[in-house]
Length: 238
Image (cartoon, rainbow, N blue to C red; front, side, top):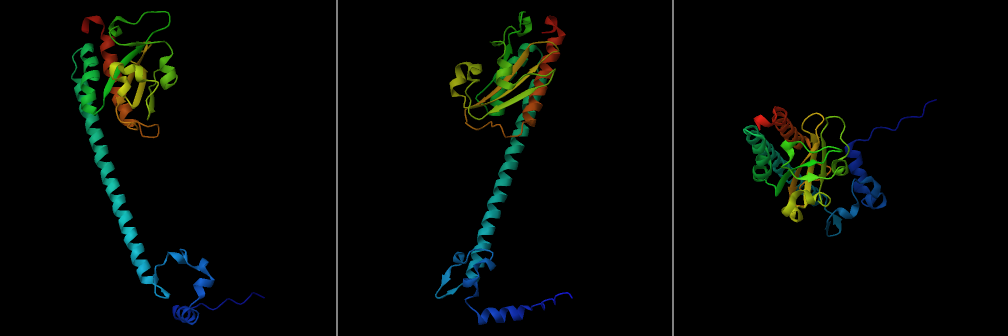
């Protein structure tokens, strides 16, 4: 036969039992959701009301801080998107390849709130750099793979570093002040040498490996498309 089910206890019965056994929670602390010592003492009894008030106050403070953090993050994200849009609009207004280089290295740092932005070209194997890229700083062969990973076809690579070390040489005189950087690499034209687009910040941790990179990829794609269009037009258009 089935065992008899225990009768359902009413709240009045539970209350009456606890009143008759005031030391129940001392003997069975596992019945409480928090340790008994968390309750503030009030004479010789535990003040449950004061405990719940304090718990609710702590919860309100945590929720308020969480709300403040969300608002701050939203404002920061909005500002970042706005900066990216301004940077792309200025880039699209360039009327020559030389203006593209000037825009990226001189205007973008101010628009993006960075210390420096630079463009470098990797020395091709067994051939010279195209004349249109000759004015850019040149880095040794293999630098792109070492800093950002090996390029696959026409894909773009992104590397974020919260403590800049290996890429400081890209920023010239400002390199020692660069504390974190973001590096993008891609070939601006099919079969052309890879270009490094480097963003340097004087703030350590401004870029970090775990942060989303979709906005940087958007900015990088805009740069490679615009630069590639000018390179494909040939010297006459530049």
